[in-house]
Length: 119
Image 1: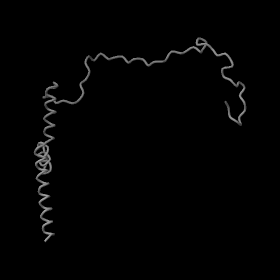
Image 2 (image 1 turned 90 degrees about the vertical axis):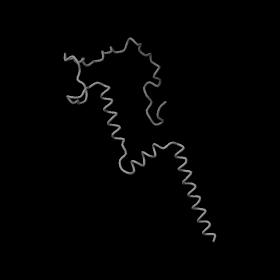
Image 3 (image 1 turned 60 degrees about the vertical axis):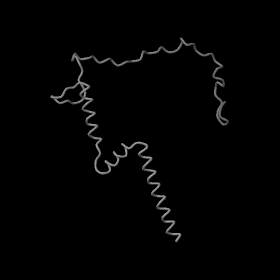
Image 4 (image 1 turned 180 degrees about the horizontal axis):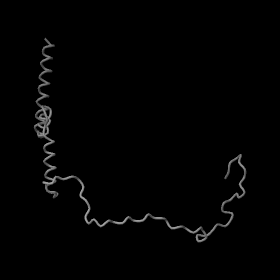
């Protein structure tokens, strides 16, 4: 198929001539690869992260230090922090009781306002 206004190609069918076989293609060149760097004879690698000279570097003590730092960071700060900690510590029943108490207060206020408006 071609363009309506285009020139006809010399070969109308690409399969009209015989093709080439798999072996007759150009020779493939091997892929050039980078050389592997040589390993220096240092022995063991370096450990990542800084450490103080007086502290031990075993995993258990490092995990304990990290847990203590997280615990210090999670302490409530100020009035809002204390309120948030109190809410988090509340159980489902405690939450439901508070909601129920607030709803009762709202109903009482509505009844009082209706009684005042009625008279």
